[in-house]
Length: 149
Image (cartoon, rainbow, N blue to C red; front, side, top):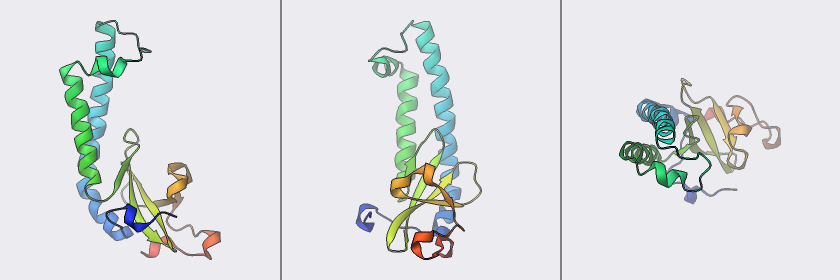
């Protein structure tokens, strides 16, 4: 079981939803930058004839000023999202988790860019693959319902 001391902040569903208007434009910029980064990297690999399986591929790509700037900006945006107490995960999928106390443990409320509101949760160890709708009660927890936070 994860301790609340591991996370700088714990969220209710309402608090996580209240933060989404702040997070949406940040995640949109991340996704836009990742798309541009992919295209720019492909161009540099092609133009400079860099083998895509080179062990130092990332180092070579970051020699390009535009690529280095994009990587730096994406890292900064992730840090900005994390500074709110949530956890930016799976940036290519636009995933953000919000630590939430539930039934004696800490779980993650789970949001994916494009979703209107927080509609899912998962145990920390289960990750995105273990996402469940908020209204699904866990049989092991005696029918508790995370959506009442």
